[in-house]
Length: 408
Image 1 (tube, rainbow, N blue to C red):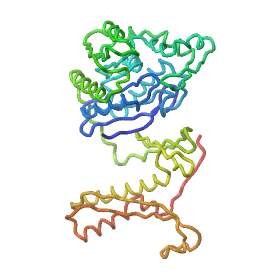
Image 2 (image 1 turned 60 degrees about the horizontal axis):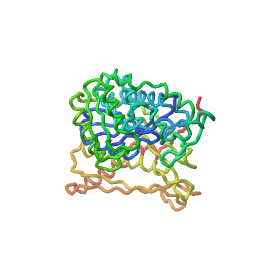
Image 3 (image 1 turned 180 degrees about the horizontal axis):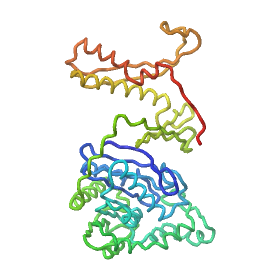
Image 4 (image 1 turned 135 degrees about the horizontal axis):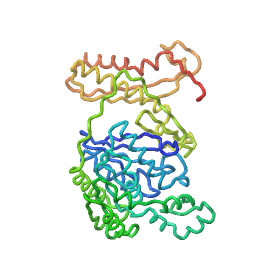
């Protein structure tokens, strides 16, 4: 299952971390998933449902709301309204880069947010709530013993799922002003309500109120035996299967997106500190997001490849791609290429073919394994010659001009 990780701009200008799970085959539809309160895009329920939906041909965008997971901003400054706005921004980004979401899925408070946001996402045809409250105010039961303190002091730290979060008076005021019943009544989209009758976090009566407020077409599916967080692996697969079968009646296959022209200008690579540890960085290249770090021995947390790892990866990928293009163009029976690389420092005096004779030199050892029993010796030799012609190899072995300036 391909997975694209990237960032998009959310409410307040914050960069929000997102993941798009894509089917191996054609995309039948795009879905937008909203996670539960204080959770994140990588919570087990979200990942399992997304994985199962991709097997049904549905691509799923999930992201961290402002101040959660890898997204920028302060959770304390977020509100239910800002979460709704983040969902609309996510739909806008998906529409611009891949295709508009036809399915909206929300878990717990994310379900309430999806109901509130649905009217601002015109292409959405099918809306799904999973263990959703009928009123956002319901979430306050998680810290009911601190409500007076929040109203008195303005901001209070509360413990939610064993983690500390700051809740502000503005959050309470915002959810008190929501009229979710009006959004539900004016949904004008197909609605599927999924809820466990034994949910002890958000009671089944919430599903009843949502169902009564909604107009047809509306459906209810009991998640008998499930808990609020869909902790069992089979629950996620079951939910995804029901969603895919139900939504098929209401959605049209996603239109294929045009392939970018080869002449398009190279996209920027943006590297930004996360401040979660000493060296950790978020590397963004177009729609893709990666983590960079240093090994523990160098003071990092080894949460991602190091700078030289990325350098070697670029050379290795370019080498393999160039060899593949040549093999296909010449109809050579090459099955697979594996490139193994290592970076080291050597004494210049030990390099016989190098012009520099003093100090230390950078050396990259590249070992190429070519699979293909039908290849003859001449074909293998030619492929090895082609390896040195990959663009990144040429860049690294030529003079490079790096222009550095201060951002405006």
